[in-house]
Length: 332
Length: 167
Ligand SMILES: NC(=O)c1ccc[n+]([C@@H]2O[C@H](COP(=O)([O-])OP(=O)(O)OC[C@H]3O[C@@H](n4cnc5c(N)ncnc54)[C@H](OP(=O)(O)O)[C@@H]3O)[C@@H](O)[C@H]2O)c1
Image (cartoon, each protein chain N blue to C red):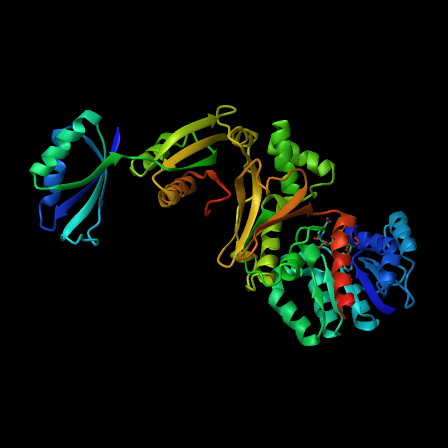
């Protein structure tokens, strides 16, 4: 049995999802020869620590009841620097201006030779090259499937499942909030503002939905794909972005009568990265509704391959983190 | 009827005039002239492609008059649009002058606005239009989209393009 000691830094929707998934999959992991032991759970106020492994069910309950897991006044960065372990699961909030705590955490982890699995886009959109090179120099493993498309496999799919296949382009819907808004506007013939309000009420859109509806979130995901799959060195500045705020129910309806839906489509290839609302034929593989995400990879040998799945959600996104974890430690 | 006509001119000055004269005499409406000066034929003539609007019964007359002027008529055919595309425009489509936009495309000769559906929920409100453009081929589709893109930028319209064209 191999013991993998890990920390969960950031204990919001995704961090808690990871805890739940680890509880659910304990036996499965043990059968695979992995004893995954969480030695620290950290939120913005502090941490729960235990070298033998914290009680995850207890952490989840305390987070729900008290709003924090803090028992010790210690930050994520301090945990990374001072406590022995192998893997940092980084699930702090995305910050695409500075990289936020996530960037510091990841760099510190690599400095100590720790592996990192993350769902946090910010650091990867800003400093992809630096992160990957630092990880490589330190011999650390760095996985980030959950940053693009939530549960939907894209990065590992392209790099591993389709290995050897030259990928010419990837097109898809990478933001569930926008997909939900456009789907509902058509269904209800309702205005953008009305459906945005509905999405906020349902918790599908965040209180500040700017990043989603202006196409910025999609652009960040494309940057990660451009760097990870196409080997480019791009940042958000290189993306040509148009969001969905100007879309009208009339436009959606006219397009529909003409056999099309309007979707916010992200598109990446070696020479262009682009986000804009596009007309998609109703029976096209990319014409998925609701909050679903979808990506079509145009491959050299196999033609178009399309994957679809839930782009967000606690346990759903945690499933991508779990698969990254398994793929790191099963291999060795 | 819209007709396209491939002719060949001798590579000496004044030939173009000899080609255009018969058209105006027969009251054909010239839409475009593509002058392939770099592509001389083995006969050392310059290939030119004309697109004109005329009545079918006038075509033999035009052809005869061109030949009288010493111009070789290589091919005459109906001018057919083989490709088409739908584009959605959103914004103040109407009061920024949709007609200009249509004219810009129609006057190219290689493309036309074949259909336009407009939806205006109220005065001064954002309107949406679905435009169908026909063009000679894929390249001409792309050229008309470039025109549309420029116009949209100028009039602050959002252009929603099909997924399979280069945006
Ligand atoms: N939600 C999704 O469906 C989804 C999908 C894909 C990717 N992601 C990405 O995954 C990450 C986490 O998302 P989320 O939805 O779980 O966000 P969230 O619910 O806002 O949780 C963020 C967590 O990070 C903690 N935190 C904030 N600053 C910290 C710091 N400096 N050190 C340690 N912990 C800190 C917060 O603490 P408090 O609890 O004390 O506030 C909270 O527990 C984000 O980067 C997000 O973009 C999310």
